[in-house]
Image (cartoon, rainbow, N blue to C red; front, side, top):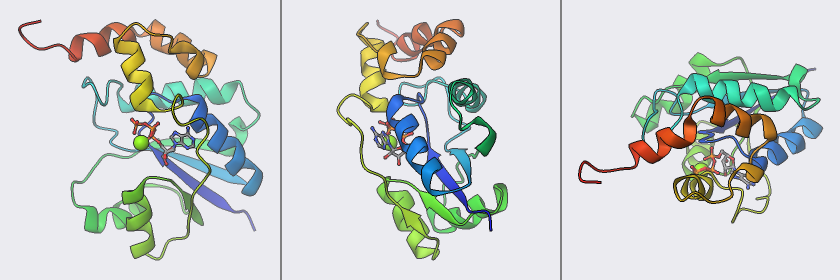
Length: 173
Ligand code: ATP
Ligand code: MG
């Protein structure tokens, strides 16, 4: 029987740590549904990219990998009601057997819903971290080597760097 996993994140942006996790999941299951959480968020310092932009980023990175045929990417907006989030998730995505996440809230909510949850090792977490990458982007640091080449090219194409800097400013800046 086909075993299908969910991999959930905000992917702001999709980086090489996410890619390493996906490659590991790909060795353990047949199909992967990549769920883009907080998909309604965009244009903020913590969530600069839209749900659709994050979808494009992930597909562009997958096009460079042999996981492409085994993955689908789907956005999921927040419902701001954690106690029913597992049902919300189930209602919006294809059926799945197991969820991969290291996020403590996701782990807690999945366990309470009796959904099998697996964690993955953290890969070079100091640098492969959305928070660290957004900081580097704002401060004109070396960020592009921390994401797949196709993601760096996509962010440049949509003016993502300028957007992040602009939405991080205050009125008096
Ligand atoms: P942020 O700092 O914005 O939260 P993030 O790097 O944690 O960004 P998420 O989209 O929140 O990225 O992560 C999705 C999932 O990937 C989470 O389960 C997270 O723990 C995991 N993850 C993120 N970075 C790594 C990494 N370097 N190695 C392994 N797993 C990671
Ligand atoms: Mg995170």
